[in-house]
Image 1: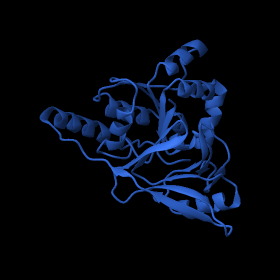
Image 2: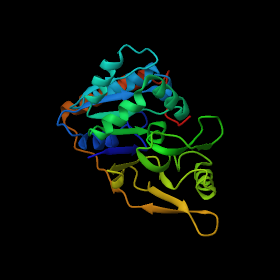
Image 3: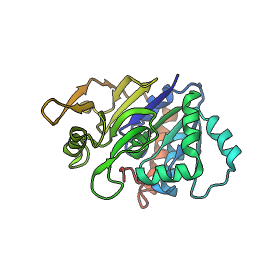
Image 4: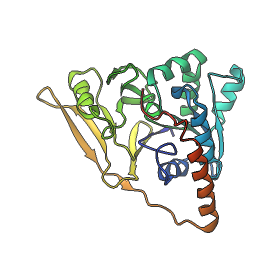
Length: 264
């Protein structure tokens, strides 16, 4: 079973943890190994710390793969990535992410992990990278990037409702054929694909949607809003409440060096 998830949020943007808990709930192990890959941000240290702060209190084994200060040799890198139950890719610059991955052979390893059952997921650039193409600001202005790992057919557009110009620019790209038909993710949404097909869509924001965007018969584009299950906050006991306070203090310390979550 091959699975990947597109995320419109997570530990770096939301304080409720709903989307991250949803991802962990789909891991193949009861205590999954979760590797964060912050390549798109240039391996920003604050981003790595933010991930560890959010996941060390969860029932999982978190780790971070840094490529700008790479320590693992080729065989060790392969062994490490194939041992992961979840690979969680952060936001930043999609084009740079793809280039660095290819230079280190990580693109091939992630494809191998995907076919072996590792759940791949990510936010923003970390969603764009899995498809055949994406809508990006990697080069400054919003534009089309007809490139990606191709594990998800079609294209992806993150921040569909969260950034000015995203919606009309992506629709224009699909209408002209600059990008193939694809999936537009509003902030707050999670979309799970199993063996290439959409198997679940959820949201932490009641009005947020996942959209299917395709060319219409008049030279434009049409969007179809898909229903999303609303994620509910779980009850918080005394221990977890204390853990949330600790996490909140750690996150406050990161505000001076915020993570890059936009697709760049």
